[in-house]
Image: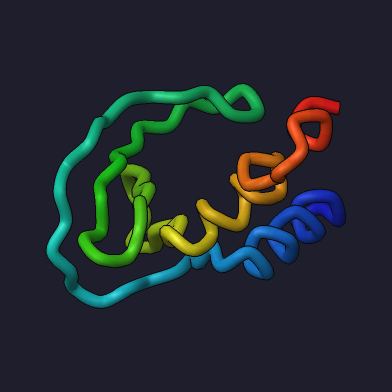
Length: 91
């Protein structure tokens, strides 16, 4: 894993994003699709992991990436969604 990717992963983990093998859970299918990353095509599935967040799984891997509800709120806060001053949101 290159340094930039490791740095990004560290920041996401600080926000509460988790990646790895996770136990069984009740999930609700959201979508499936394909994406191209670094010239390679991947099939993926999105599901709500009830009570926890949104998970992304790709074909051929047991690991999932879980974006917790808490992480989503931290990202929205970082983007200015919860700022009181309108200028802080857009500038």
